[in-house]
Amino acid sequence: MDVAIPDGIDPDVLAETIATEKAYSQELQRGGEWAHIWRCVGEYSNISIFDVADNDRLHEILWGLPLFKWMTCEVTALATHPSDIALLAPSAG
Image (cartoon, rainbow, N blue to C red; front, side):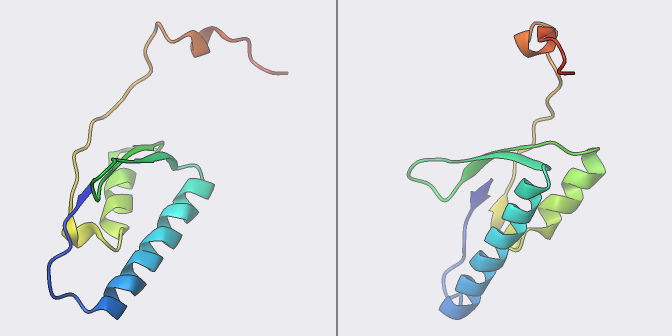
């Protein structure tokens, strides 16, 4: 996700939008749908991993981001790899 905030945005509106975005993303993280988020150093960008039921849910989440109107997002669908050693771990219990 790359964010490009246009010039001339009211600083108070921007601050409120960023605070709302943070709260929204943290709620999704606590709920497990936003599994990981990493900052891209030196950019107003991040790389995130979502664990959602389907593409429709991801679309809903992205469109719900308060900063979405100023974002460019690239989505790459991921699937479990059969060589992942985590798949070989015995289940708990």
